[in-house]
Image 1: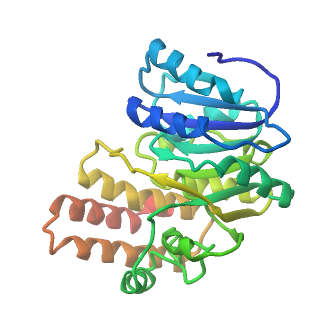
Image 2: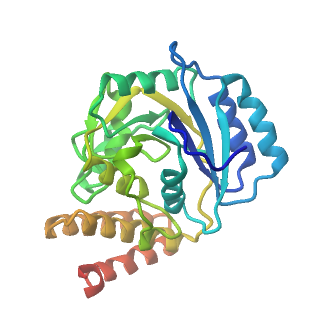
Image 3: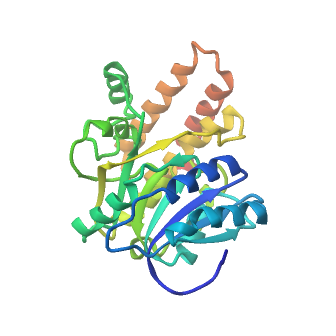
Length: 309
């Protein structure tokens, strides 16, 4: 394993992780079974770790990847947080293209081949993403999401309140389409499009919306595309150890920060208020009082000088 080096290569497969050896082993195994472009591919697998992976484990994964010719690189971070892992990845990755994968995904054998082909087909793209198998919404679920502004009627658009619910209909797509955002478990960017990433105060811990912010930054440097051929299996291992009140509060507050980042007008804040009210009332039948308390707390902030500042 190496951590340094300045040699630029075609692809960095970046996995930001924390204490999930079993998930990571399964993910790397799927990468090792990938078909590569016939012309060959210079690629690396870059692990950015907030935990404490052992040397023995890393040596084992290095051997798994050896037949592919991909180098395994490892970086242990001192300051935790997913956004900071994204920032560090951009700083140290050697690839012209950075593919961000969650540690709990599995790639189909043709994924990398399809990804590189899509970049060749769309040379102007700042980034290319895909979909997670099994992520879908029922007809009535879609109606509820549309009415509560959690989803846009257009598959590549964020909702009026800045929500990404339209990704639940991406599985219906039959061809590549433009998008405003990616799903964080399955997104890639040209390194030049996200080179200026910096730490963000509101993304220090629970990182809801970090993929939307990253997509927004890249979008300023070129179009983003979703290729429905880029499917992967997302096991969605438990990630948050925070209590429900904090998760609910952060879910709304981070979207307030995203609206600020986009310099959004009052209509979008009003839409976010409506979305929050819906989320709050949805929890009432389940008597999830902790989540309701978090949403109420966020609503108060939304109407305070802090939210307007």
